[in-house]
Image (cartoon, rainbow, N blue to C red; front, side, top):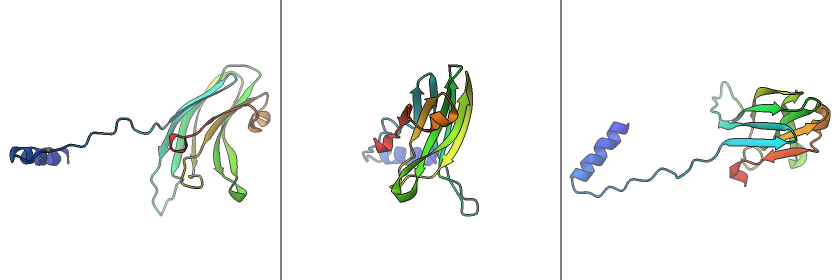
Amino acid sequence: MKRLVSRTLCALAGAGIAVVAAAPPAAAADDSFQLAAGSASAYGTYRLMMSIPENPVPPVAVDGTLALNQRNRCAVVQIAYNGPADGLEWRTLTHLCGRGKTNFQGRADYLWGGFLPRLRLCAGRTVAQAEQGDRCDVHVPASQS
């Protein structure tokens, strides 16, 4: 395909026809995220998935790493989904207690309006306390900013 385009442009230029090439976009949409809450941090990327009718998959995949640097603390990474009555609910993708690092993957559907789901990192003394969402950092994808 590249050769065909290249040959066509050369032929047009050789025939005296001005060729105006479209410049590539200055910057692609940023699909990465970085979160920090207390002594926890999470980073990773969003990916859009393709699906076939025989094997449907949620269209959004999230890959990342959760790290925690404090012994007596826990952290959770959660992804938003559409709840009842157009509300926003949070589903836990991964959790970690104590010092360490873990990789995670998750899949989700678009939110109402076709938006990418938000991610949040929350910290607490226990997983249950972290999941309550009192001490969090939320990532809003660029398409929603």
